Image (cartoon, rainbow, N blue to C red; front, side):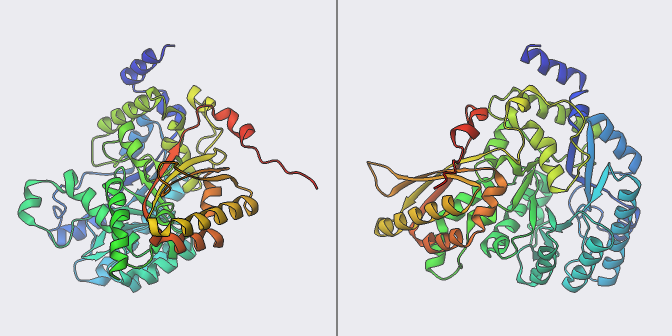
Length: 469
């Protein structure tokens, strides 16, 4: 079938593709009676500027079936049910988490859940996280961008981060109403239109500025709504970091290591253009589908998913990653072994690298060095490159180069056996020594992920040969 006929078929029928693909949805909410009751008691139903939609299990399953969604990861929406009574907040969140555990037990192949926590009471949140993860079998936790003004990245949350790190927890981040807030402005412009992406970016930048995802390197953080404004904010942060560090207002931050722990869901206005923007700060194995059900009608979300599938399949660069974005990455992150076994792969997937686990990660690091540090940087880059290739089986090649016309312009071709090899690489002692030792030397850094023109030939072209002596 011609590609354009295939796209028309998908858009007109709204069927088959999603069912065969077995989509995993990492951004959906269950809105329970106990939660609604607490909000009503405090007249907070419209605190986020939008009425809470109706939710029930049967309607959600019906949406999943119509959209071809195999499994959904549920989490509590905004606002945080904390109104000055810590015990009240703890009780309603415990009830919601226990409901999530019962729902997962009743539908083990359809529903997973990330536990809510009774913040801003950190002690109660630590206890609930331990109970939810260790006893209830929660698949992660949901953290608000702020809980009554206590922002993600706040030092007060460090004990909670230690608990989550020790359990290698997945953290779903979700925006809440900012604190403080300009009420007239919010009244004219809904939170979801602009402030939610800004709020998410604000919280994540606070987290990154403290280098917390290096300190707590075992957590995996899912950023909502197509990365919010991070693809714009991260380059700006990199540009001003040297000045902030020179003034002593910011400590050492390994931005690349922090970013490697972030995942991104596609809830909202996902498109190939948006995904390409995300790929400027992440890799193809860290992008996940999210619907944001039930905040839009089921038929709208189903149509949006079909349109996204069709747009990805029609895109010459991104079509190879359609199954990764819509299914495989989330199945791996949340350990969903039953998802993805059924259903035929698309032609693009068959022609691409076999899977995200085995696909080589190919990248060009574009680096500009301050002139006074050129020689010291080149020495450090050559040393870490040689050590990495020699000692790490997953490092296929690290080839540093300088431009003939400008010796402060460094380009490093990096080829890893796969994303896991890269994550291992940036955690090694020799890489950390190099990174921390050269942060002040780098004026500009841009990581450009490349898509091989002939993926099938990559393993042979760059195969490591072991020579017996």
